[in-house]
Image (cartoon, rainbow, N blue to C red; front, side, top):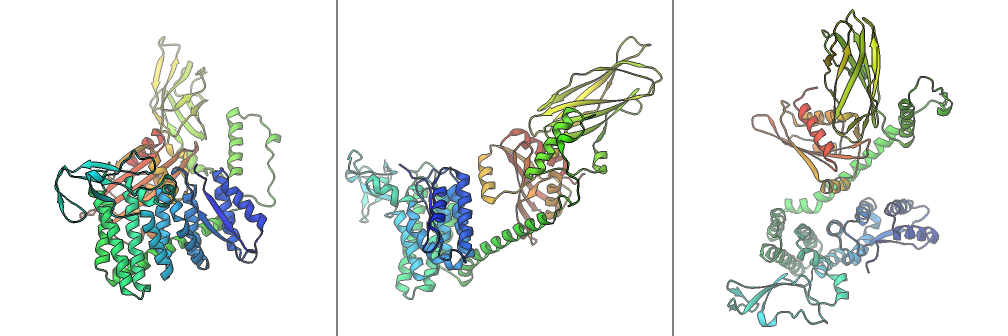
Length: 607
């Protein structure tokens, strides 16, 4: 039976009760409690005055791949190694000792990157290489054996994993170098015959690679390349360094042989193939510049990313601290003691929603007189006998239309009715009523509309009335009212891992081609951010420089809890024009289509 993920807290002089409490939370089934316990343990670790000997190691047990808890913990583990050099040796040793227990591919990739970047001494490098080879098993992955000696799957004492045996249809070369006819040899992809108990503990990399995970195989190749390059610097014996290089090349060529064979469901992808071939060429002919890039630049980039992350968090905390939510002498507003005279039920509910938003830290849109004027829409022309204009107010899940109707004639209008209809996820709440409007007088009519999703909707309708001179009813057609999606979404932030997981999970995508008169990449990116009311997750340092190409991720969240993801990929052509695509993904179709329409309308630089 698979065990849950566990984080062990080892201590010498620290508080045993505190460590056991953290361990109990991390062994529980509550994902949020695991993450909070990890943060708490990190804070204890960094507090050197009270617990100087506390250090943390993550032990990865068999865990379903859809549980992202252990992946988040390992990323935090990575930050600890970078920010606490004194703990590096013990944490690398613990990770190397428990690496074979990892079962998820993404977690394996993170752990391999840690081993490749932070194994610095001779013993650490040799231990990391030995751990990877142990988890890969015997090589090559793609073996050739005689037909009469193929593994008998009926034997209960042995277990062959990921075995695919197919008769050869071409001359093959046996292990001793001799040729065999197609009827005398078979090709098999198999792992060594092992008992079921030991299989689940030792060959995690081999099992994942044989299942067709060539992205992980490329990570293995890159990790071995870094370790071999570092071994050449710390190993005084050139013979041992060359032996390790030869072993790494054997692993890479075995992976390429497996990926190019026709006996796996999916062949190796081009990106992984090119990456592994690059590693092979690099080990065969390494220059000083390439060595510096692989051994120094990667880690420097990661350290720079962590520094930028800490800077952003510090700036956000500083900005929040400077915001004055209330002055000491401000009056306390007791909602239940306020007068409700003249307030509709919708306005009362909206005040409660605003209070809850402010209390829970939710977003509240700032309104001023200029913005209020922008929300006044003209519904009829000045030459029509009845003039109408509407003031649109968005109350979270409701839309309120305050329609001003003016009788421009010298006659009394009888049975005047404002008839409205909706298109999209909008629902009209009130039934239309009839009014009598005196000559050259006006009347305020309110219409309430319910909103059920973040989708651009349309409100249309007519004004119908009767006069004493004309027996038939007159109709004035109203201009359509388009509900803007920007009223329902606000900028939000999320971790890069969370963004990638949502991007892979969400099924609705809207792809918009770039068509703009703007010729500067950064200016166009800022224009899209402003037009869509979204947050750019890509750090500013990644957008520095002039390369004629920009790729950035944007994120926003709606009042309904929906996530909106946008990826912008643009390139500057020779003639100076921008080309590329803007891809929008969400869990629901409405927000993807509405955002796409908004971007299409705004991307040319219009207001």
